[in-house]
Length: 166
Ligand code: SME
Image (cartoon, rainbow, N blue to C red; front, side, top):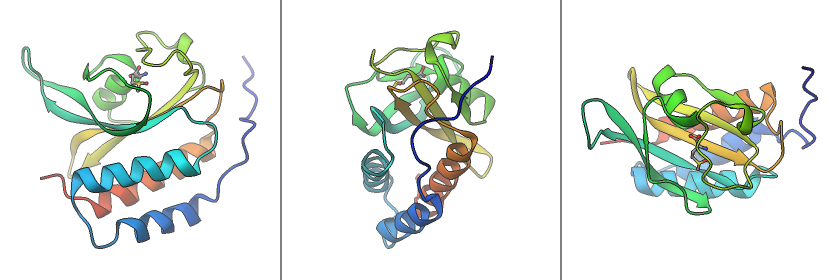
């Protein structure tokens, strides 16, 4: 299948990353920085319907870890996602960014908002540990390009540099 590039103009990710550095400068608190970062992404990246964090927590049942919803912008979402489930759980378990052009074609996708059609999930990895994921949804199929992936990964890296998790 040929996938046409996303219609949205590519943001100036280098400039946005400098803005994140500046917004988060002088504050290292997780709740504060995750809230500010979610609001910034939702406000500056076009054509999104959800942007926010799921944070790693010990699973309530059995061993292992699950994802617990954290600061976000958008509609109410599911609170807990086991590692390995849905796009978020898969990105956490596989420790890699998952760019999904059409969520309806992703096996096990968890539909929190029926408006979502495309999704990108970036794992939060610090000192080898998966601390959670940053999840971004769009109503537009094929919304995210490889350039968006690189730019969004740079933004998440700036958030991670600026923030303490303990
Ligand atoms: N769609 C995600 C669940 C989280 S919501 O999109 C906010 C998934 O499949 O993991």
